[in-house]
Length: 440
Image (cartoon, rainbow, N blue to C red; front, side, top):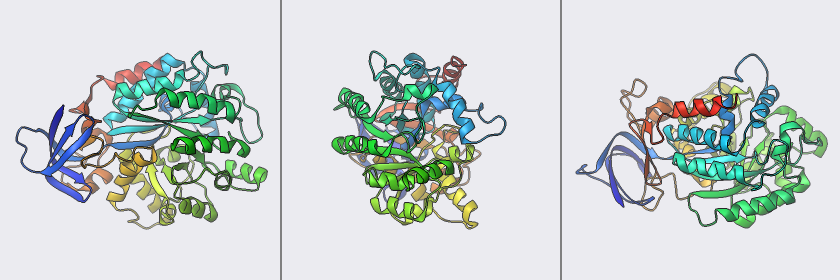
């Protein structure tokens, strides 16, 4: 069915334009041109392509407002995260993820990269369907109106040279070869389904020994699928890696063929100059998650230096301390200002590109994140008359002033999932409260 929307203003590949008609047929844009609204549905404000949340752990949303109590660091936060991981089952995970993805849709996200390692039952034994937790995430995304890149994570050890313990048991298939068997079954289940892409993930150098990383990389190469990895989020991780392997985490990944144009390193906070060069020269993406990195006191990553050397920057909300890609985008610039004591490192268009086209491409959807014929029909409209955005009309109003609350309309894959700031599933706050409350 063909639909036409009239955008008061729209961000097109060659800049912001007024009076833009966007025609949609099914899940694709078929025509973009300027003209009067006529009978088209009107979208007041600034319409941009759908946002890509390139790094998510859906179950971490249950920690918001809980782990902010008291003092601590990443490692104390991790213990609280493990407590939540131990309580989830396929049904409760579906309810939680559906609500979390609906919250993302309200924020303008039309595609999520779910870094998925919560695979098995709490005691580590596989469910009858070894991929039932992954299927729950796919169902949740579909019900909320998002495409999903399900980045299935290999998780073998409890730390460098350490055995698995406690909730970590449910993350692991035992070794990378057995991970690959399960991951192949998962990929086969969604082959040919355009709204789901099964990718791979090396959880971290803590969780996957170097000699097993090649199995995960080979899966990515064989399927031409994304390959993601947590990298250098903590100094302690770097120190242990260098002590054991005489190489940084980035160097270990490079030596095992895990960097390249389909790969994304997440966080990349504590890098050496050599690390920056390896990431940049290999064409690897870097997913910055500033709201999580500051919430966990991780530090500020060298985003500008990485981009200058060829890395492509994407954005993720990771632990979901906040779900707001506008906040993630401006934080890349604002954190750089804190680190350098100078301003103006990123044009607003570049930051928005990280949240749209580049993010989608890193997740395996290169035909999304742009308003042009042939692209996925993802339209996100942001109010320009709220108390935050009133008086400004360009991209700067969205990147530096707007919040997720200013998104009033979302069309995702041709489907209207948010209208008037309300999701088709209803009261998302109530859905979140119910799903999270059941875990406590």
